[in-house]
Image 1 (cartoon, one colour):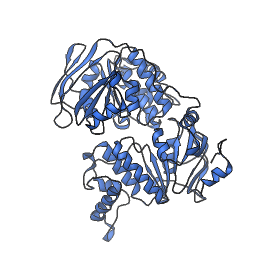
Image 2 (cartoon, rainbow, N blue to C red):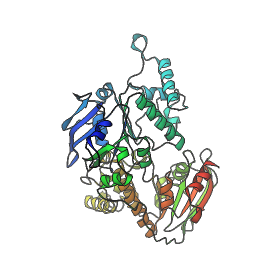
Image 3 (cartoon, one colour):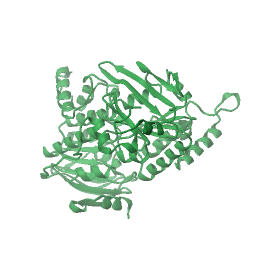
Image 4 (cartoon, rainbow, N blue to C red):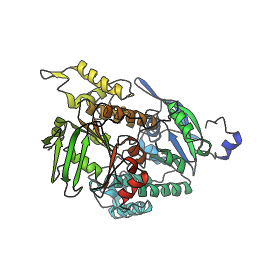
Length: 510
């Protein structure tokens, strides 16, 4: 552990029992980039260590090394002071290390119980899986974390928030000594977040060491005991959370002060570009009507299950509404598919970028140019130089960080993957861009870059719809806010009425 200048050796030793797990000068190198450079990290029993840093700082690489997905190129891992190696994920699990990832890795066609115990299901006579015991054990774990989910339900029947709870239950189904939580609250409602905090306290009481990765500083300062900061693959500071301020953490993360999170905007709203009338879906939303103008940022706020993303997917042609009309530039638009939407100038950056936003096995330049092949081909043949030129133009505008445009998107950090998805759709030169949780899971520095770019797009006359669950973001970026509750518009607020209290009151039906 690095000792900060304002810490005495007595203060450090007072908070440091022997660590359960340690990383000692660990290095990881990929072709063209050093992901980790001799970083160290210590996790203590009954304590939460927050690992913070910008996207690309090395946090995800550390998680993959600790869970046996990657192997370090230098340094060592120790458990209880003894060197260990995790050649596989199974080895990490056997050593008592488990992880709850930001992007849930589960199987839709299996039941909840099968997902929870995949690979280590209880067995009965003749080595066969004891289904009844598996269901009951899964039920006990789910009940313990406050999840009212039938373990026999097929996973595909659950929403995003409940799938995340299943992922937590899966991580807790092994007798772990070290629990890694990578953006665990990203898809949870406020009630579920509070329940997760209670779960963290319970795990601390059991003496487990917890590594907590989050970009939300309110979470870090609420539940963390220690902090460790990475920047550009290097360790820049660590210590007790009570000895550091939010401003100091931010400065360590980005190497500079970030005092202006939301950019100043010259709000120059133009003519109406989009009109939605009476949009309805049999099960997801009803009577959605609003207008959108050029150069406007229209925020959509609501609690989990409010129907915001479901409506946006229908507007983009992914699902079909049962009734309703869309007018673009004064002309009626019949949107039956995403191709229809893109052709009319509407694009959608989804919340689930890993599954819906990008093809992670393809390189950056091919992802960016995929919807714009007409601009990068001639006589039916792709022109590689044109593809790179187009991809470079939009990735540079978003300050994408990658070794090259040949890098597979799956090898990028979450924030940079998000930038690829945004760049892909901006390259189509749309009239309306829908951003569904555009800064979900990305760091404060990247958030500021996305916000600056949103302001720039609006200044250029592009109409922006932003779905966000973060009240400061909604209030800081929006010209107007539509609040949804239970699939309907509960209110439209603007000007002096745009306050946190107003949004929450309408969203909760108070």
